[in-house]
Each structure stands twice: as structure tokens, then as C-alpha cells.
Length: 286
Ligand code: NAD
Ligand code: FES
Image (cartoon, rainbow, N blue to C red; front, side):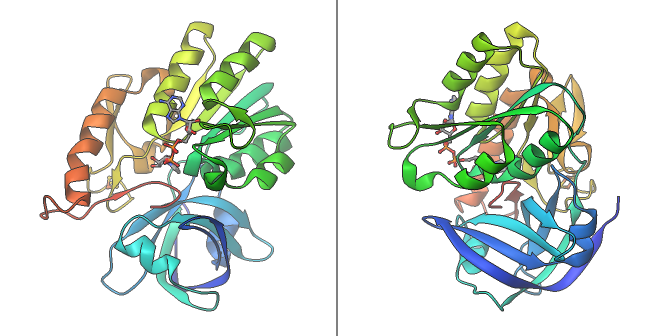
């Protein structure tokens, strides 16, 4: 692992993507040089502040920048949302996590659900560069919440957009579009990032067809280096740590029930019902 800590990571560019959702381009030359699809960074806004994980949405080694997509959820992400280009995050550690598998598989379908779209962008481009035919399916509840459509279109051979209310693209869920693609042509691999119910539903669509399916899990993260055990998940009957063994795993052998119940347990902390633990969840938003 080529871990780098960037002290005072400067915001080079900041742009609104959707309500309370921001794209940040940060100066982090050594992280940009080593970042691979599927990896994440942990940032702190201030000395002694909470450590928040973010999936790397893009990296540009020549410009020395990485791109993160931040959704304002808690105090730290709200603080980042209030920052401007020219401001600096206190520090940034990464790249963390195991890189995605990038090989020539054939036809690959990548699904991004809501805010998870940001987390599949870098992998989409890498899989296309590796010679795969890329069909991307991105979905959001409504048009306003749809992010990175242009970037995903540019990285894909075919892009299908869905919204739950039909305000953009097709009306329906990403899984409905996936079922149609699978009935239309051979698919050799599926990758899905988004809310847990979506990743679980994708796994059930592909299971009967025997299509290898990868999901990026978002359990609680604390240190991000395999030391604290916070991100424990059960995969194939074995205990894995999402921060070092993942975050990507074979969807057909993930114990989603355990993931849901562990995340639910920590929701109490997030809502402030329990205060004896500080936790963070890996998302493109942290
Ligand atoms: P959301 O609830 O608005 O759902 C987005 C889309 O996902 C929907 O429009 C629909 O097409 C699909 N979807 C949702 N539930 C579904 C179901 N039961 N069956 C089929 N399709 C379904 O999403 P959001 O509020 O933007 O949340 C995004 C989630 O992605 C967050 O929970 C975040 O933690 C997760 N995330 C994970 C990572 C990671 O790296 N693991 C990265 C970014 C985001
Ligand atoms: Fe601590 Fe993974 S976040 S072990």
C-alpha cells in the first residue's frame, strides 16, 4: 500500500452538483499519482476533527489533483460544504482500500445509485480503457439528484439514466434497466455502487444468470487501515475488513443482513441517540 498523507490539502475547484452535493478538486499530487479505481481517502477538516472517508471519484496525476464528491450529511460534511476554492482541508490520507479488478472481461454493466454514481466513475473509465464494452446505468430518485451524467456518458459506450419519478431518463429503478440489458445481450460482469437495498437487489437480478457481480460496501469506518475492526463485514462466511480487504466484494456471497444490522446499530450514534462512539461510513459523501 502506497499511503500518503497530505497536510493542508488545498481546494483547487468547488462546484455544486445537486442540492447539498459538491464536487471538490483537491491538490494532492502524491495521492493522485498512486490512486486507483475503487480506492478512498480519509480527510480531516481541522486538527482533532473527525476522520471522514470519501471514495476517490477521479484522479489526475499530471495536474496533481484528486476529485471527491461530498454530500452534506453531518457536521464535518456541512463544514466542507461551506468551504471555498482556496481553502484547505487539515489533512488527507490515502489512497486506502484495495483497488478494483481491472481486466478485459467483455461487456461490463456498471450501476450507480444516487450518490454512488460518483464512486463508479473512475472504474468505468478504467474498464473501458482496458477494452471492455461499457454499459452504465445511473439512477436517482429525481432529476435534481442525478449527478455526473455527462462524465458517465463520456466514459461509457452506452448510458441508461433512470429516475424513480420519471423526471429524467426512464421511469423506474436501475435494476429494471439491468434486467432489460441482461435479457438483450450477454453480460460478463456487473459492478454496482449505491444504497444497500440497491446493491442487494442487483445481486438478486444477476444471481440466476451466474454473472459475476461486484459491490462496494459502505460499513462504518474509523481508522481505515485495518486496525479498529469497525468496518467488519461477512463475505463467503469469513470476516473481512472493508477498508483493507475491500471495499469491493463479490455481491453473491456478501452477508447483507449483517451489514444492514451493523449499519442500523450505528445509525443510533449518527442520530446522537448514543454518544459513546464516533463513526463514519464510507460513501462518496462520507
Ligand atoms: P437513493 O436511495 O436515492 O437511491 C438511488 C437509486 O438507487 C434509486 O433511484 C434506484 O434506482 C436505486 N435503488 C434504490 N433502492 C433500490 C432498490 N431497493 N432496488 C433497486 N434499486 C434501488 O440513493 P442515495 O440516497 O443517493 O444513497 C446513495 C448510497 O450510496 C448511500 O447509502 C451511500 O452510503 C452509498 N454509497 C456508497 C459508496 C461506496 O463506495 N460504497 C459510495 C458512494 C455512495
Ligand atoms: Fe478500522 Fe477498517 S476502518 S478496520
